[in-house]
Each structure stands twice: as structure tokens, then as C-alpha cells.
Image (cartoon, rainbow, N blue to C red; front, top):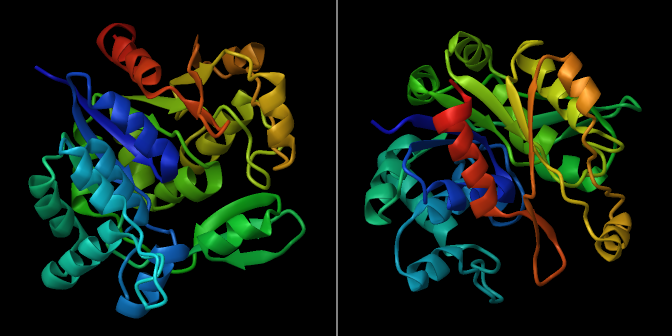
Amino acid sequence: MMKNVVVIGGGTGLSTLLRGLKLFPMNITAIVTVADDGSSTGRLRKEFDTPAVGDLRNVLVALSEVEPLVEELLQYRFNTYSDLDKHAMGNLLLTAMYNITGSLTESLEALSKILNIKGRVLPFTEDKAILMAHTTDGEVIEGESNITKAGKHIKSVNYKNKVKVTPQVIKAVHDADLIIIGIGSLYTSIIPNLLSSEMKRALKNSKAKKMYICNIMSEHGETDDFKVSDCVKQINKYVDKNFIDVVLANKTNVPNDILELYKEEKSAQIMIDKDNINKMGVKLITADLLRITDKKQVRHDNIKTALEVFTYLTRGSK
């Protein structure tokens, strides 16, 4: 019998991981943050009063098993002087389906059948979530896109409005054999999925092992000067001090020429501090997970990362 794997996050990191995981025998459920309010997604939120759909679109595409042309269609952005400018086709499709069904969960289920999704995609909440960040200099910033633009050091995040986690999310967490946190931006993609008291309770009560996949590079304002253990501590702070059981981290050094490019973004490689991780009682798995894109971007190799997850799922989590 295939095991149930729940992946929690948002942004490009989550999609990268899912593209690898779908190649292995497991039942995948992706729980996706819906706090995005930038670009096409932000405009659709304002005009149609819908939850954020951008990250959901990327996850649907990542898990789909359709012809490349269909994938290209979903990711297509209009380039025009009309109101369609910069809108992603997949975002429009999700918004239309939401207006028909009145439910983001039902919309995703319907589109999953059309797109032949391997797994299940769930929104963290059906509510119109507005993320708030409290910075170390005392400023309060509203909206995920504004938080990212500000580039200030984040102390904590919360929702402006009360959000209710869907029953489907709670059940998926309850039924999971392995819960994966990440890959993704710590405060704007990962922690937003941990802010509900219902979700915290479900995660604490879940018998599944909890794995955190650490980013390779730091992000200015979110993880400046962080080591792997610092990321784990921040996630644990929002759920429980002993929440994370195992962390998967890249052990390969990023080439110096690439590091120099990232310095311009005030970003550096997140180093593994094995002693501190061991003191926390967290199992550490290190592997060569590094991939450098043609645009000289640092990314996780989706196949290598997924293989490490599958190996742990079938051998190491016992």
C-alpha cells in the first residue's frame, strides 16, 4: 500500500519539490498557502473578491500529467494593453471555476480531473487571507507582496483576519504518514500555513513524521544570516518546540561565481550547523541537492530531493 505524503508550503519551491515527488509511488496531498496578493493574483483578488490562486496554479501544473502544450497554456501570460495584461491563463481559469462553484476546494478537484493530477491539491483556507508582518524595527506591513518588497527583517507574521482551515486539510494531516514542510520562503510561504490554532492542533496530534526541507539560499528580510537550525527553530516556534523530526539539507557548496551574484540580493548559502541540529534532537539528512539553472539561479534538484524523501519514507521513518 502506498503511503500518504502531505506537503505544506507555497511558491516556486513547493512546485519544484512536487515535480520530483510525483515520479515516485506515494499518495501526495499538497496544502498550499493562499496569502499571495501580487501581480495577476492580486488583481484578481481585488476584482473578484477571491482567495489567492497563483500558487495553486503552479502546484496544479507541477502535479499534472498532460501534454507540454497544455502546461504552457496554463502558465501563459497575456502581453497586451487591455485589462488582460500580465494575467496568467491558469489564474483566470481557477477564478472562473471559483465563481461557478463558490468553493476553491471544489474548483481544484474539478480541474484536477481535467488536468490528470497525480495527487490532490488543497487550499490552506477558503477565506481571503491577508498576511501581516511585524518587523524588528517595529513596523507592521500588510500584504504578502508588500512584505517581500519592503525587504525588512521580519520578527513575526500573522493574519489580519481570522482564517478557518478546511476540513479536508485537517483530514489530510490526520491521515498522513509523512508531513513535509518546505521548500519555500520561511515567513511568506511556509509559516502562513501554520498560523491557525486548528492546524497547529492537527499537526501536533498527527502521528506522521515531520520533515523540513531547508532552502539552499537565504532570503533578505526573512532568513538573513540563518543556519539550518535557525530555520527549524522558527518553524517549531509556531507549532511546538519538538515539532520537526527530521531536516533534509543540501551539502554541496554553491560555486563562488554564483554566490557573488546572490550577494547583490543580500543572499548567502544557508550553512549546516550539525551540532546545533543534534542538540535539538532532530535527525539530519544531507545530500547533494544543488541545481544551477541556465539563468544561474540556485534551485533544488527535484529528482534528487524527491529520492531522498522517498528513501526516508520507505526506510528511515520506521
